[in-house]
Image (cartoon, rainbow, N blue to C red):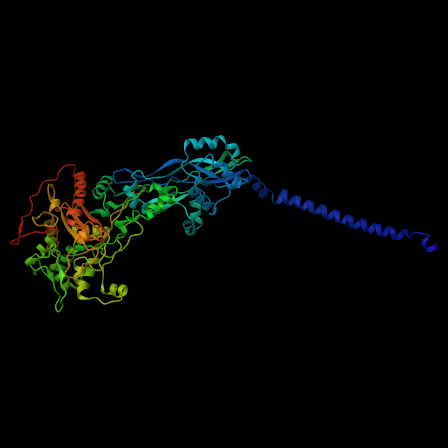
Length: 636
């Protein structure tokens, strides 16, 4: 063996050992330094943050939904309230296996596919962690007991009492008050950050009617509470609480007794009744039939119930008094007649010959009067109003022209939104040259004037518009904004004048006398409703054509499909000497305004006036049957 391999280099080995020891020591020191730094960060720098996170494992913030505001009629009768029900809810964050839990619940609680679909839909909506998601509403006592017995097996399942909307009058106010329903994805899409805060803990929102129009006032302000929970998520104690602010109550102009009277008078028919306070514009009654039960929608309507309502040919969900658009027919003759007087186109003594038809110059077309034999050789405006002579108004429409009729009728609210405090109002059509050119791509023809003058052709109005225009007549040109709500949270809403039309007093006197004679003279078209009345009223009947009748043919009810028959209309006000209430009635396919629609208005007048005065009004002598040397008449 050589000399070089016989001896070790101890000096070299010591250096290597020293270097390795230093490197290991450096790593140990760095590790300790990192550990100390992390410890310092946790215990000193970020102590508050991690302490808070620890608390959040056992402390949660829960929203407290506010109590929704109540809705009362003018006499303090409850129309929309809240009632407690028991709700089965699930907290997904506390449930290890959601599907397994649902299977366990099915033998205990009646859960149908509709409930599950709504549950999964709400599960996808934005919500706070540990916020309960409703699965079933209105649990029975037996279902509550079964869930309570099995509580130890149902982690994350809660049964709690909540207030939900309730409509004690059911169908009676469905179209005016509307209803609330579950908050949907489309509702959430419209929410901003503040809305998400206000609706936390709330599962419903106003969908239509006053519930939607006054949603912000009725909703109130959400509260909250800090609660301590155990490992299973059960609340141990409430640490602090901010109470919610309840929504504002609404008091309406609507009158329960009057609404019920109008609905009973219209029962079994399709149509609408609107009654207004002439002086203030307050909506005293607003009926649309057929109707529906709004309670079905509160916690989520079933598919079967909704399908039945939506597919009904009678359209119970359709708000006829606000959205129904009908030819006004002869009910607007008082406005057209007043326009003729106001524009000096005719005077009260102007007369026409009525052989039962009217012809435009250089035209062979015959525009028929509703009375085939006509109304006589000398028909003046009084007789034309009282007997509803079409030929007189054909002639007046030809003389006035569309521009004068359109501008004058618009001042009464025809073809315009009334501004009522309800959503989804339709404006109808009060035609003009510009409207026809834009909507039909055609010029205005002389024959259009004639149809417009008797409320046919392109003219369409809502029952609400007819009530507003009638109240404006009774109020001598002062058009009041119709309002359903009288006060919000105890604060009164003042009447609002929407427009004021100045017309010579003698013209007002004449036209209101003509409307009074229509009801009280011996040959007035509405004379039947005057029988036995201890007050006087003014009014105008109307019968609106639904399908066209060919030249030379007569209207034959028996040959027409029931829904193709004429609509029956009536507008009026009472008492005649100091109008308090104005009413518009339309009965779809009722055929005769005098025999079908007018008696409904009479019942509404009786109910309101006898309620107001608490006793019969002083009897007034009827007007003479002879006016201007002629006996007045009419039967339509």
